[in-house]
Image 1 (cartoon, rainbow over the protein chains, first blue to last red):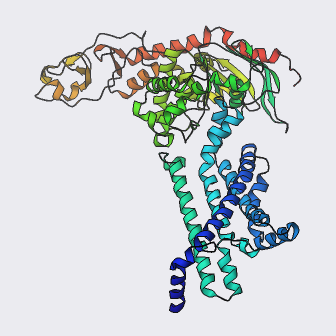
Image 2 (tube, each protein chain N blue to C red):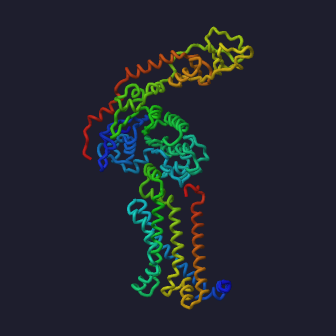
Image 3 (cartoon, each protein chain N blue to C red):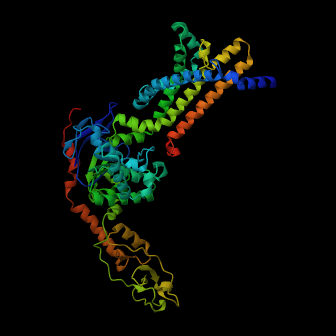
Length: 223
Length: 387
């Protein structure tokens, strides 16, 4: 056990391991590329849907149940399916990651919108805000904390799941996991997994910091 | 100013919220809509700024049919205050108040300046402007709600149970503030409450609704209390409506006799019993201090040092009801009358108050004109239009 940890430490700290086109630094950048692009695409798709459902109140059932549906979706199965249908390209990876992130963001966006005090919305309408102004000036700012939570959750899931890129022959930190499994190299598998975990935690903390920055000055009760 | 003409609101499920309402609300007056819950008073109020659309009839504000205007623009011209204040929790108090001016395109600087002005007008300290609504007390939030409604100086103010969620002490303060503001601003106010005492305190006119959305009676408070249209209104006004009527009459024209007062620095032993058992003791300036019992005079010391029964002096602006209360609770059975500076002007006996109270009931019941009641009766004559 101790031996294993020692090997893992030297694997993670050896300068040779970090540089080059197959080094850890490159893999991290690849991993981040998949994750960031997929999360952004998911946000672009999910935010308008969640806001629309929350604002109009129509489709609430869908919004509430989407996230459990998303959780039940086998990502590896999906990536294989899209891969088989679409051939050798990086698209199956993106499709799968986006499909993973969209439900989480929709559900949280809707939850944030639904949590806005109806009295406040009534007052906003009563003093003369139009529907769109209520959405942008009242509902969105008040729902934003929960929306950000959704984006954070989605990001962490996407970072953790982006390992599947390697499953269909692409890069990212998943490379170490799948290569290590194929070569029966436990140290490499563990090293890759540890890096993925650290990356997910860092992404979560970074978004948490961003959220705090966004709501700086606002009292806790209004967050 | 606000005119309801044969207005009804029926929901698709068959319930009638407001039934054939015709009512004219005079400019610059406070009209209070009262009734138990589900009587349509809030629906009536919300139809004025089109938060609820009527299914029949027309409503006009300032002579203009409200359906002709764009709904959002209409609302910006009508102040709106609701029970939980409905303030935007993510905006500072100042930005909350500036909402409508900003919607009207005033520009940030001018809107902020106006908001600061209103903060003062509703009696809040200037530094409250930078806070968030959650950092204020319920009463303060309600003041901000009123300030937000007044920001663009609308001629009409709709208030939907604005003081329903604050404690009785704060509610009385807020009611007084509203009366003070109204004295100054003379808005056309529509005020919804289920509290009849609040209605009597604030209303220039009171419209009583009953379940099913029917207006039963609309009249000035004194008229309503003296001559309720039917048993429903009488029940709603409560068993003490005679006393409530007294709360509307001032003490001003009740006669008072020159006081048999003695000064606090006079020796207690020298007080004569000739003027009755209880003698009023005043300060050197003439402010009433308490009642001295001449049956239990101390052997030495001044009148001011003796044990005095408490006195609550009343001014001319105080109501007959508070005078009656004081006359009943004071051992002397009389009321000390003072100037606004608190200096004694005379003493009014319980009998004089009783006389005036009886007369005020007779006046209210006998000589009032039925003009104020026409709003309610006109409704019956109007025909309903197809929705």
